[in-house]
Length: 272
Image (tube, rainbow, N blue to C red):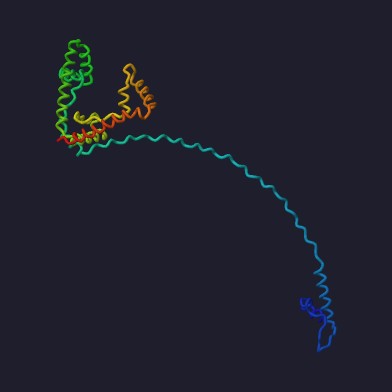
């Protein structure tokens, strides 16, 4: 009976008083003694520390380091050079061609001696294949005597003189403004790849540009016994070593010529 009563009070023994107070009197009872005994046994058991169990150390297994595989060397692809594509030549606009057609009455250059000989004798070799015609005419030209070649030379000179007169007559029939427009159209055609052999019109009435001070000095001090390159080198060194007062003469002469050129150009542009 006593044991059955003490067990439930084992947890209470740690904090319960050692003496029961009944109606104001302190009295030690067998129950109290049993509680005190249980309390002291619990305290003793708590004071004694049990040795910690040794944990068996696990053998550390050395991990093998992974072997690094050599990297594969990838060869870079060699870049092929880009193909240079030629730009297509733009054809000139129709309006430019139509404007230039009205000026097609320009006299054509007659050519040199051999070209005139080919024109005159082209009908004689009409039955020969085209690639053999020039070869045949060339052999005929080489077989001519000196008197015959002189005859063709005089004919060529006469043709060139007549061409020069016709060309001057054609150019002078145009106004300076018309010549400027015509030359602008010719430059456009040449730039666009059409009529690459076309040349700008040359007007003999147009005043020539004046020379600079250095060119005037170079002409005045030219040595006929020296070449063009030697004269230029000598004149350049002399011009650099000259003082400003020595150059004043040539600068004044160049200024006077520039003023005359300006007046002549005004008169030229007023030609109707």
